[in-house]
Length: 443
Image (cartoon, rainbow, N blue to C red; front, side, top):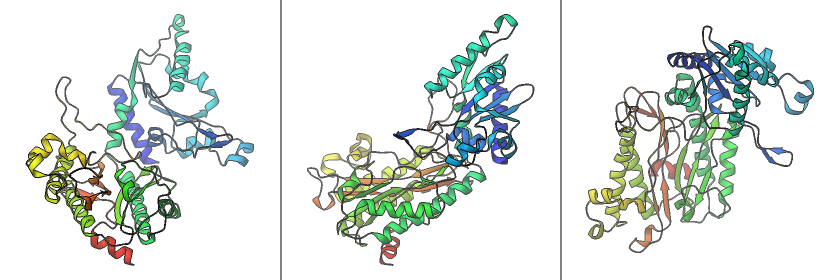
């Protein structure tokens, strides 16, 4: 439990810097899907980051005062419910197992929390994140304020706990990096499995099933997000979901899929031919995207800006659009004109990456913190940051666009760990070059 205890200590130290107070971090609620069926439960990422505790109906309280404390409110042991729903730690076991100072039944939080909030400087919580929490806070604060004649004071300041936690979560520790690497390895196996399975006549959901099989068989608890399996023209829809479109000989398949392992996400995109052999036009565009990703990877290092990778990829992509005739040089002008005027957006309309961690689009500002009033530049990369690098090209039929490229959608995405000397590609085991993909599919 050392990683979680260390994180709690760091949060408490930051709370002291702001005068101390009480932090309230609840986990996620269970959500009904329909009738008596719940959605699969997934805990809140902030809560888990500080506890390692995965049960619902739980709240972590951090007290930064004369004596720092970490207190958990959780479900009591209940043998009858455990027959139906499975094991519960209960307060006593949770306190010992998760290295907490105290633990109480969740049913007592309305009585106990006002006592902990009395005479403290500030409340730290996720402001405006939950109507339920906001309503609870009103009740708890009312209980504290009712004691004003007895000399009790209520917190006079509210601070968003996410401001403290987001920067912490942006820099991954060794424990987190190891899990993300394992998740990346599993997802790489899944992409290779989908490539080997692919053939004309299958449907998108067949490949999705192969992905899910590989995820689960290696211990992943969930997909990190809804898998994109897009055949043919569907690959030009950025957030397409796996459907029932048939895989056709001569088409490409774009798969954007990654597993979640022990609460950490992976995120890989690969594009490959249904029949295992790239056509000339497919290969031409694929190599442009691959080279653009290589340029972005080279621009991902400590001291570089988050946007440097996007800018590097864009140079290669835009030049490729001119070289292949996707953009008519006589109409759009030079490479600089294409970029400055935004003409490239017809075929490339998204950024080249995002933070990755407990959430697939993980927390953390994309701009540096600077004194108020100054313009914020793009975030400076530092060792321990994990981000995706995912350029693409998406060609829809349009006047002036060479027909040989119509309906080709290509994205190549990897997960990169910023290191002291550059970056490591955590997803390098997923086949990526034309030669590698065709060899895997032949095998």
